[in-house]
Image (cartoon, rainbow, N blue to C red; front, side, top):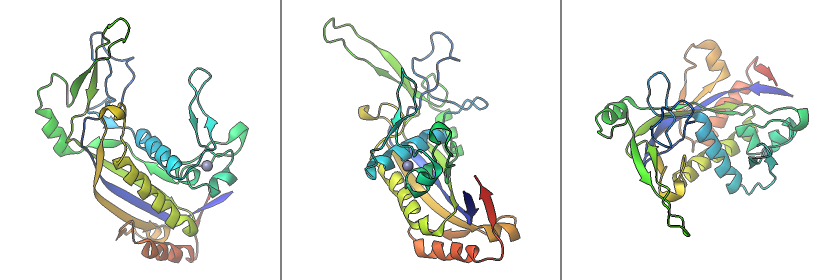
Length: 267
Ligand SMILES: [Zn+2]
């Protein structure tokens, strides 16, 4: 399957935590006596961050449900089944509103469909780093919350501390969508926007049902960059658009498609 690249759409903004956010890290590298459930941190700066894969997984799951896609495959292990929707090969994925945006791995050696949407890791804004540097919780940039569960039979308590990024913290986010087919542009962009809207009504990270992970997207900006622009100018001459200006965006990429040459990406 040949996949043309007509250009890129860059969607950026900030993601604000309206309640404490917990995206868990493995405890492997934690010292004994440390918090029970730590957050994931950048190893170089020690700042908490949101892996792009966490946001991508959440958006994908929300879209799957919103589009009522029920065909699922187990991508986990026998002890830890993980059932998600993934198309079985690249041809199916191209017709699937979820897989062509978020990607699919082929079943039993069939062809993968690499995602059209790339989500960068989200780092704290510099403003949030300086604000969080001043908080006095005994932890760097974070707070900890005490959670307790009581055994209904023995009344034994199961206390644990969960580390969270405090509410008010803001992360920079950037999504990059590869424009490969102008006919899919409208549906794909609407689905990306739908997933972001649903995220605000759901939660990110762990313990959402207990109030964690309410987030808000602020300062959403969209830039369209055609492949022809990229070839002629080093910065790609980005066109400022909004996600609602579908017709304008389509026109930009229709012109790119009619250009004298275009890239062919072979999968
Ligand atoms: Zn699919």
